[in-house]
Image 1 (tube, rainbow, N blue to C red):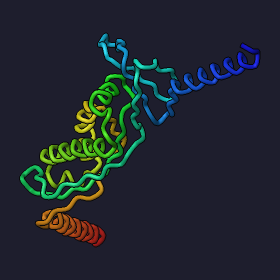
Image 2 (cartoon, one colour):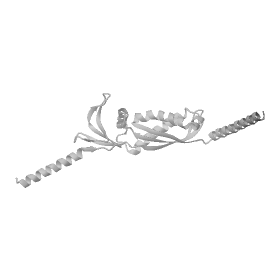
Image 3 (spheres, rainbow, N blue to C red):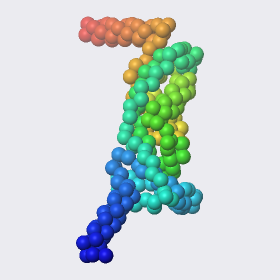
Image 4 (cartoon, helix red, strand yellow):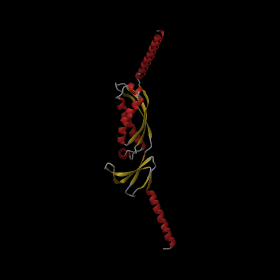
Amino acid sequence: MTPAVIAFVVFLAAMVAVATVRALIVIVPPNRAAVITGRTRLLTDGEQVGYRSVIGNRTLRVPIIETVQHMNLETFPIEISVTNAFSKGNIPLNVEAIANVKIASEPEAVFNNAVERLLGKTEDEIRALAKDTLMGNLRGVLATLTPEEVNEDRLGFAKALAEDAGEDLAALGFHLDVLKIQNVSDERGYLEAIGRKKAAEAVRDAEIAEADAQADTRE
């Protein structure tokens, strides 16, 4: 074998080796998680799982044995609304809200929930699962509050909803970033009637206060 042939073979082998290594390198940006399945490992709680994960880093996968799947960790908005959902006292209300949700990267237990329940699903399926969960929580929390509490203390309503939904979403592998109540209404005019009554009471109280002040002045 001539030196030229040997050099060519060495060069070819080196190129194949480089291409093989490049194919086995898994590079993961900070907004994604790579779930590498095929080998078992122990979690911090002692549970044995058949995968390892990489977020915002790089690793080498073992050929043939390991396969790689990715999950998007970016926040996505979910618009939720219910119509004629019963509040406390059986008064039906319409509520519109928006939530920012993402697949949780931590704590470890919640991320493991995401791997078990969300890995392999499409983004549309993931969004639908989060939305269905939030819709159920919205109806559940709404049933515990009066229309006045829902409409007048929207921050409190949103906080109660976030606390209730946060646990259920975490069990699925989600993290709830923000939740805001955008609109509360009803088709029977109940909230409008309450508003008119309170406005009338405010006017009456102001008139009484003014009359008392004038009486004090005359004295």
